[in-house]
Length: 462
Image (tube, rainbow, N blue to C red; front, side, top):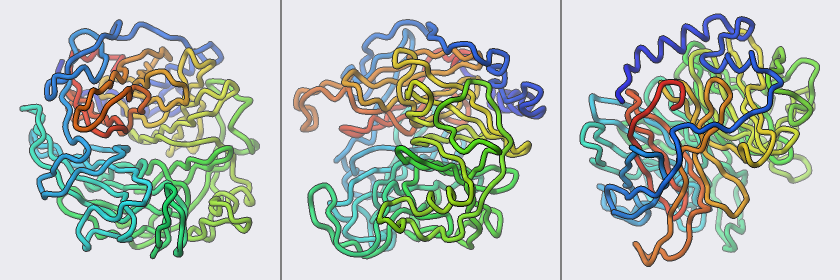
């Protein structure tokens, strides 16, 4: 089903214009009418069954009836630049569209022991192996056209976000200062500090320059509020994390510096537990005076967090996925909530209000939401990253608060591309839609590949 993206966007803007107080939080404002009611599982698109990949013929995923997909960008396969595709496929976004040609930038959360996979001009620290690859996908033909390295020498590039000026913000989920370090049981010489955000343009390599003013910490997502140019960022800290806002000195030019702030919910120091769906809070921001100091005085990797808490910033837990639509910034707390199974928050940048949009009451409803993306038709895609030994899944969250399983990892290999065994517990990551909503792109972290999913999408589901 093809959806007019302009019509869908007008629908979001119309609903969000009134703000939280008039239940106008895009389609998800309707959840406020059900504040306090338990979250519920719904049927969604129906039962899942194994579906063969159009590219390999293997049943890599389980999907509802009528959906199909094509895998591409497998780990170790040659890219267009002749280099091998790196591993650990994580955050990703569609950064540019030229007709049917879609450019995606994909993170690789490599642990730092293999050395750079890119040329020196796009390498930050030569002994470190994280970074990004850039992919061009033909949405009409449903196939990958080209791929290349675009940033390397970075560490554990986990999540990030697209910008209105067609670039990708790639975030390091690691804090290290120069010197010798043990990474993945190997000794590595670290030449530069790590724990920063890097910007990757859609049409060329990154300059491999850290955006130091945005902070040194365990970064996850980074999304740009289009109206202000401010960047909102999550932090994967357990048991404590902060939600951050970077105000650039010059809108759209992040490399020129700015100021870093941490969210403070007025009168509420701890947002991890003790709150109900529909709870809302007025928000102010406390300044992080030394964003470059990611190491705390006690040697822990929470220097930014400690600065913010000392000024009255509010505590979250394991903030990961983040997505912006209009004035609303959605983000997940993977293990927040009274049940410890996950929360979805929404911040209204225009009204300076924070809303607890959803929290899972039990593992059986939803367990550990991570990356997220919004569909042009209404509904959020949530990538599960649980510690249970069952297969990992993609879930949908509807505007009415219904949760349903949309896709399940079915990857079991018998010496396929050198992989043998059960990989169904590998997480999904980097979910993002094509601008017209026809394709849902998502990564399977291990062994490492990307899929483009299409099918009979429905208004109000995904």
